[in-house]
Image (cartoon, rainbow, N blue to C red; front, side, top):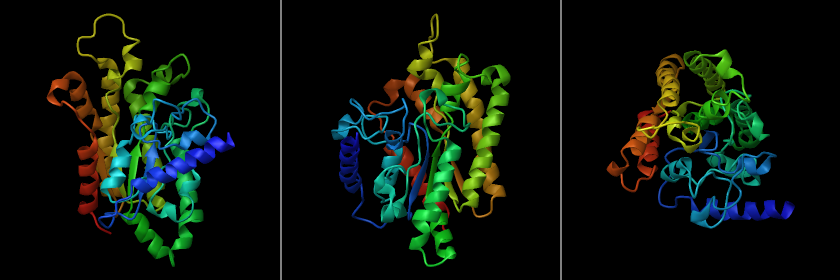
Length: 313
């Protein structure tokens, strides 16, 4: 096990080095990532959990599995590249210690959700609350020593980009699993969306109080179109998606968009961007011929550059 972890760290080191832009100055000093398996860069490799992607065919595009739940780079990897930053190392990796942390840290953990109970059937995972606590530790124990005074640290954090992609598991690994969780018996779809947004709002306020100012809030994708949900549907499904589930997700997304607007007006000096993931990917599912071969690169690139140029602290 020890030799496997050493090998993994060495592979990460090569991959992170290849991701760094050498042509331009970074558009932001750092990129800090929070979320679930969609943006986990390998944190779950270091904890006892069933939610892991440290085996093939994960990572086939660059020859080895890194812990990312995809064939290659995730959307936040592309985001880091277009910001002119190296790929952001996972918090639990030794590579996030020292000066590497100055360019950003990835706290995302597969199976994590807004609610602490979400994903518990997988074993260990770092909840969103836990990820925020790790961010606080990063600031106090890894970053503060690189700044001469608190004002410089505050300025650095204010200019950094915060990416948040969380909430999907609160449905597919909580609300939509009545055999394991009681939330669907306790809350209506509307009430559950309200609960998630109320909890998320408090969590984002924690990040703001720690110094975060520029944040991308990614909405949930069309979960009614994914195989795990389609497999539970009986009868004909002409749209290719489960409408009831997508309607639930839309309730959450609508509230998340409103939350971004509210926080922009209530948290001084903040700048929030809501990322509408749902509409694009739903259209890709129901109208695939419109897109041909698609990537997420231009979508996230545009969002991050817009966030950068719109506010300067």
